[in-house]
Image (tube, rainbow, N blue to C red):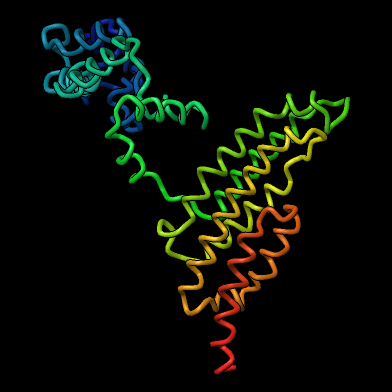
Length: 316
């Protein structure tokens, strides 16, 4: 009696054998084990999906198409793997509501940009010192109440900073001289006169700022007068006397300023600052460089320190 082989599984691309344990090994039909049921298969491994795989999963998962398997149905395994792939889909599709709103808002912010005026702080930082000065002065002229407010907000200039600014004004005079011709002639004077006027105007504005009672420190007052007088000495001398009128007027103004500073210094400890600071010699030297146009300041020092010297003789 010949043995009857049991029917094989359907043609799924994975030919399974459905024979019983009593079948002879020699008569068994060779089978190919499914990679899903293979002991070496791991559920963590990636599996390339295709339309063929989906059709195979549906065929294997149908109990009617493979009655020989009995309880060894392969339907749960493809369904579990199908669930594993579908669980990844919300990461790309179902974004949170607030993240989607932020994404759309950022796109609108990028696309809705329009032209607008430059902020005032950026506009002011692009200006030079002269342009900024002109704007502030123009506002102060139109609105008088801004003068005191701006003056209170601006930092007070020091002796060194004021002398540095005056020195820059003086350098502009030297730069304005013509390359050729008589440096003491009328043509050169016409070329540099605007810069001389600008320098002397600055001297006239800064000098009262360092005089009493505005300046309470006598040392600062004397130090500024010493520096500004040295700058005036550097003004050019012209061949025509009429062209030297501006410089001589500046010496007259400085002479009055020196006299005021000397009188104020004599009130402080009987003029010790003048006597032991060497100011008698400094003023006399300035008077010599100015061709005697600071004589009133020299006389004020000699008169004040002469009386003080008689009082100092009691102690020294």
